Amino acid sequence: MKTLIISVCMMFFLQTFAQNTFHDLKAETIAGEEISMSDFKGKKILVVNVASKCGLTGQYEDLQALYEKYSEQNFVIIGFPANNFLKQEPGTNEEIIEFCQVNYGVTFPMMAKISVKGDDIHPVYQWLTEKEHNGVWSGDISWNFQKFLIDENGLFVKTLGPRTSPLDEEITKWIEGE
Image 1 (cartoon, helix red, strand yellow):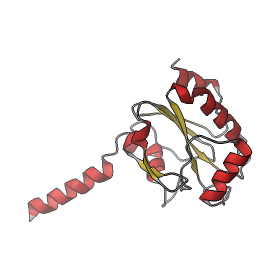
Image 2 (cartoon, helix red, strand yellow):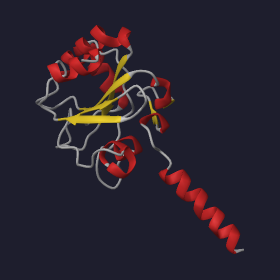
Image 3 (cartoon, one colour):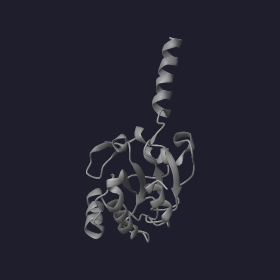
């Protein structure tokens, strides 16, 4: 009986804490399909929490420009709509994607609306904000449009603040490998 309890505890521990890379995570696309972040192996990834009624919403334009410029160079942007800051993303998934496509021509992958902080934090953002999971950094999401850089192997590189432009030289040099 003791061996069974230890085995069950070990399985629980391994399942709970075995996510060592971003590629071990899953999320739901804005269209409602489950996707594995391992689909992005071999690509540099910029993860960003987005909102359509924020003073920084205009960053969608620069995000799309960045994606168009570098998507053929093993780079992808993944947008995660979230309503955690002053309810600046109140829309449904359907309303969000329509807004993004009509107003900014967004073609980079968009995930279903999630929570990026609090008791209902999505596992992707739990990994991004807890050093015990990502091995590099712990901290809170400060606002909409906070950016996270993930390397081709699914390892956390760094986070950049919401006001950092998607076209900032630090981001473009990282993508270009400089």
